[in-house]
Length: 247
Image (cartoon, rainbow, N blue to C red):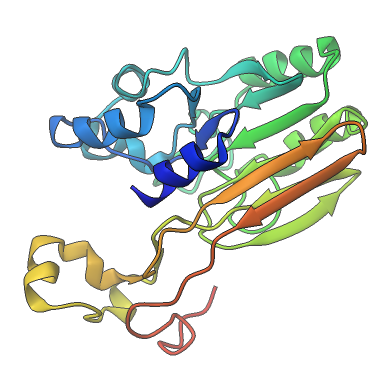
């Protein structure tokens, strides 16, 4: 509950999770409800792993309480555009998880940006720039760059790294995972006791953090200042670097 307690203490205007949050199955109902509880408005982004085990977008949308797979909200005078990077139809797909923003969603995004009277923050699960980007990253970068003067920031999850880059006047921020970095079968190892690993088999394919990672984004529109404060943590067991993991 560390994240929820801190959000209540700071009295933020909104809580946003960046995807890969919870498979929408009955076992995760209480976890989802805990995130959504309280008086602070809550917003969700669809991650690719939220659709694991055969669950559909519709089931995840309903379980999380989202209005739709992609949507707009105005929070304290800032327009938040939440995107869905799980569209099918990519002409360059290599198989596996969908990682694409289709034409219908692009048209919606462009219209939102054209119509917005407010400054904009774009939020997605899959990166639009940097590492591990969507299949049509350049296409979406070009769309956003046309409206760069309105866009404060584009934020994503997915890659489990911290990265800050600028492309054609738009600043892109990768936020780290809350709990772990995935290293896969090649770097399988035990970082906790055998009972814990038995209960959570995929844990051995990750490097977990001791503390929950999260960020708090503050915007002073009068001063034109954006501030990101965050938490720090330590690895439980060896780090990806110590395991010779390479991105």
